[in-house]
Amino acid sequence: MIKAILFDIDGVLVDSVKANARFYRDVLGHFGFPGPTDAEQAKHNHRTFIDNIRLYAPGASEELIRKIFDYGVALPHSHDMLELMDGVKETLEQLEKQYALGVVSSRLHASIGSLLEYFSLNQLFPVRVGFEDTEEHKPHPAPLLFGAKKLGLPVSQVVYVGDAATDIEAAKAADMRMILYAAQPLPGPDVTIGKFSELPKFLQSLDVNGLLK
Image (cartoon, rainbow, N blue to C red):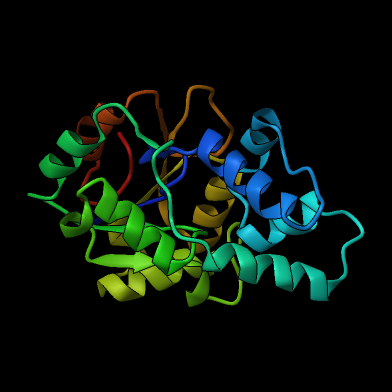
């Protein structure tokens, strides 16, 4: 029986590609790197901040990468270019009545907290897993396993909602059911949905063994 849902943030709760691309251009530009275009960031929006610094600052030493990372972390959070995905708030408020909710993101905790507060979603997500919580990150299963642990539930009672191939890989490695929320299907998820508002319907289709009908 499904008792909880863990959500990715970028690409699931919020459309963040343009905002994140601008952030990387601002941060990397301070150190003389051009940063990504919106199209480039769309391909890498699921990656961690430090991994994208390595990608967007080719040839940079680890010392410089750490300086860029620290500079970016210290900047004030700006969410003016972020947009909630259609139907997110209404659907989450519906799901909260039946399931425990949490987020598992490659974002730092400070970024997760400020984003949820900006969109008035704080109260819906008592469980949060961020970059700092695990040494390994998606597609490694560690963040999802840590999320289930924080929920106090076995993975068999948790569903993960993500939008990328790395989310599918992490869920499979964690032996956790996974719903892909994406415009284009990818191989591997238990179910793919194109609208966030479809979530309750598909969650209700889970049988007592946790298998999708």
